[in-house]
Image (cartoon, rainbow, N blue to C red):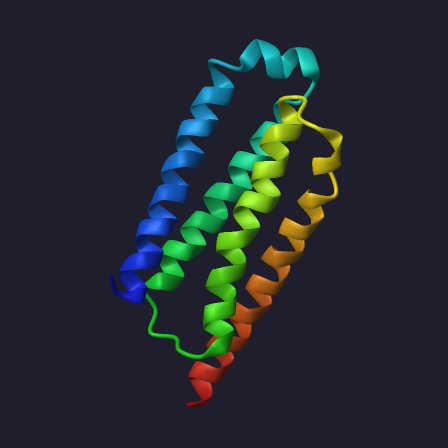
Length: 126
């Protein structure tokens, strides 16, 4: 499978699961999330998953090359399960030790966006 196709598939699967989890949270889990007061946490997880899945889909279609581009894609792929995944579990009263994992996912998003900018700047200079 080509590099481009692999990240389009990953981005598509992550976007699909964001839609499914958003619907699941809004319907099947509505009363539980409201009782826990964690509806906003669930929504944040869905939003960040969708935005970064879309970023993967867009970046997969660019002809960037090099280390910064690969770092960007990798950070988004790892950041989504760490950031959004930990928020999903926390919203469902998952173990509190997951709390410190969320900022690691956020840090990966920051590194990913920074690497994306670097990749674009290098592309322009070539």
